[in-house]
Length: 224
Image 1: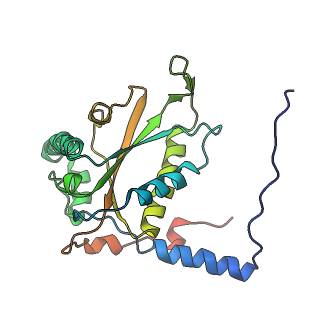
Image 2: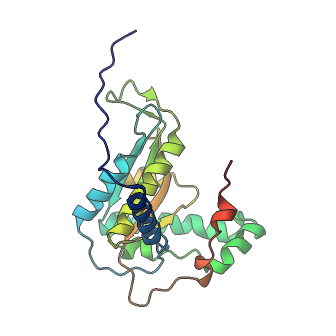
């Protein structure tokens, strides 16, 4: 059996159970105010904020610690325009027949449509890619494991950090998404999963009232 280097567990700061409850509830309360924003302003968000959020995402657990994600951060007007044009083409096909009536009925309360102006207006687009294969040698890539699960956790941390920093976000998932490989110049073995739009809400931004309808803890959890 080969020797494995090990480091001591770095303990959390000493807390009482009461302090842990307070911390957990405070974070829960802060995250409960997060909403998807579809109306952005052009106001800038410092790159340092995006870098800190990406660093938090990079701390996520992953299958075999392979960290199978890549975040293409888009801020140039040319690239944002290319993404919007391609995304809206797919969205028109979606809303004009590709999606079934049940899916469209589910989306109707949200007021979504094929037009996605926020893809050009918001200062940052973070295009998330899942790496099915990876490694330091591009000519000898190795299989990654639990890729979708790992990348999903990383994106959750990314969204939470941006929210804590007072940055509005939207998760956009055009389908199909392969045009994102071309625009972001990413290799074919990477699968685009989502576009996270990040910025400040416009002065007239609204959210659909149905966005406040959340399942209760009793509906989403069971205790065995």
